[in-house]
Image 1 (tube, rainbow, N blue to C red):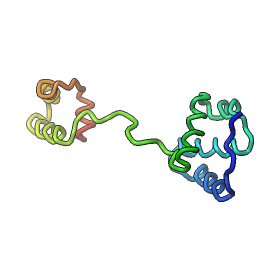
Image 2 (image 1 turned 90 degrees about the horizontal axis):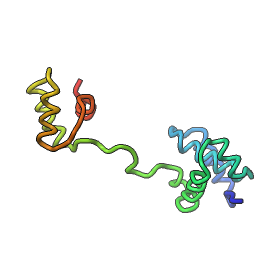
Image 3 (image 1 turned 90 degrees about the vertical axis):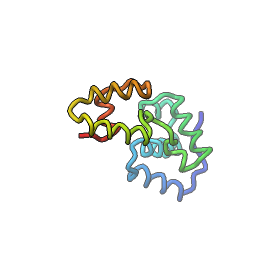
Image 4 (image 1 turned 180 degrees about the vertical axis):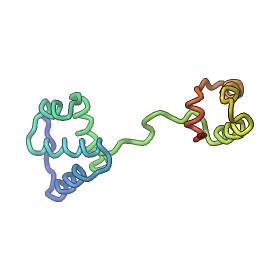
Length: 130
């Protein structure tokens, strides 16, 4: 069985504070998991409590052991990347100014110019039009 051990009282207090006050749900969840492991909860129990896989628990433990508090947070680069870079966004905004009532034309220009297939909604969201 693998447990989190050798946590100082200061570290436990900090984890408890993070668990109760962090604005990020995943960080709170990971801190709580570490506290429960320190208290002797088994991995199978933690899996049920947090509704995650065994690998996820092990990943949380590994991240804690290698990065301490930074291991609680997500790494950069997660999530969907933007469809358009800043230069493209500026060009699209100009195109929208030319034909504000017909975003289909803008969509066609995007596909023709850069070969990026996109929807009108994506064009709107990425360029904060409307």
